Length: 294
Image (cartoon, rainbow, N blue to C red):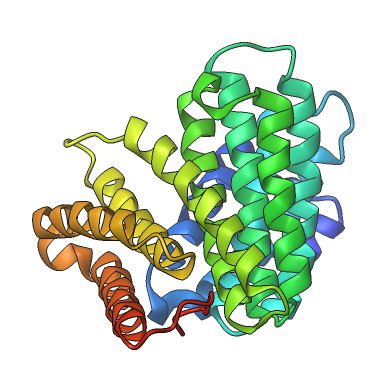
């Protein structure tokens, strides 16, 4: 059933269980392309319901504030997926602001609560960066990626000392940063510097994701293989061909385990192998000066 926003504005307050059911329905509709239009409408209703819940009177339940942030975050991602990325920046920015407040409030806490708050903030910033990318704003994308990394480092310290969810989010942050830097190296004014920065970020992503590997969690294998694909491309770009070969071999081993589910990482690894072949061919032709292999 569609929630009547006008009723909420007129004073009707949806109960906690109703809000949760509406949130779950919107999330379910977001998983299938065919139901995205319905999900779009539902997320609008979810946001309205939780806005009303946090408006008061009385003490605001932190869970309702977190659900409002999550609803805005998911709605922004859905809008980007539907080709309306510029529109998705607005709820995405509001979500990040709310997650920042929630993270600040959780700093005094310990263990899972703090870890969850920081991981959600980092992830929301990363998703906003990808929305900016889809909206044709590469500078904003890079600023947000840098911000995600710095938020993690300044709040949790070195990633190995952070909680498990924060380490996972930081692995994604470094992976996405490496991807963006490598893309900029192909068209930007400083290909050498960007390629080296990308290689460093990819190396950090590999270190974090290696520590998170779990044979019982296939996603961790997929993420590792995907990062190896980016790292191999970065290594070829900076001319570290021996290490690139080693990383390609490691990545292909993971892809073999993943089977058909590993197609995306396999494509990245194939691209790296093609880059390596072109660089080796150029080297045999006597070219010694740095030249990006694209």
